[in-house]
Image 1 (cartoon, helix red, strand yellow):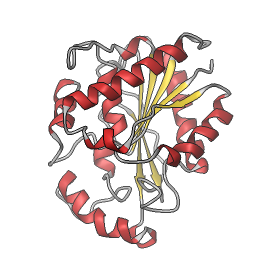
Image 2: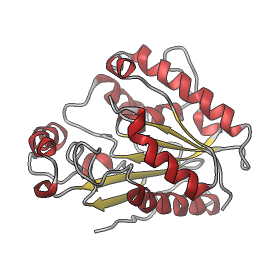
Image 3: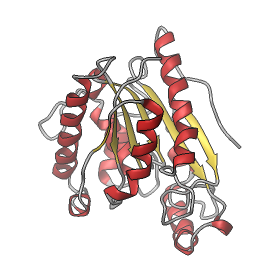
Image 4: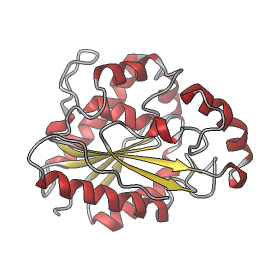
Length: 248
């Protein structure tokens, strides 16, 4: 399968430094440029407003266009962690958002979402908007969607994860004892219609457990699935639901 550049959009209030191991490992695995969209904590705090989403997506779209222009395939792979995965779903759309039309699907053919809270009983207004406007995988004929969920044993998690998980799970699924990565339940992270992967022992972030989506050894596990999904995407003739790939 041809290799292509990678663009990463991180999660709410997570510093760019936290993604350095992920970026480094993806560069090794892909042999291609990997860029993390720079978003400050102040900018994340403003994402309760639609204009702040648009400002971040503008930056991602610019990075995507720059890397796609020099890509062997003319396209890029998108990776979104947590809230970043929700925002990248919106980037794919060609319908206007805040006066802009991104149409990211023209330049990106794979979207990997890591611990992204796609559904929740108490979702923010903008997350509800994305789920209402773009339910499931509407561009599956052109984009391979991969959703990755962590299934963390809270007994081995950090004190913060043990403290936050019950409330976070209850707000998402109504079950305080649900399974998840310490912040996002498995059921919320697996986008309907996507290729799903559940990773035992994986936490939402480094503050939740020693092994998280950005840990180099974990990156290898979900990256392998992303490669498989992209290969099958190029072989299929039309849209459809791909088979489940899950680790227990």
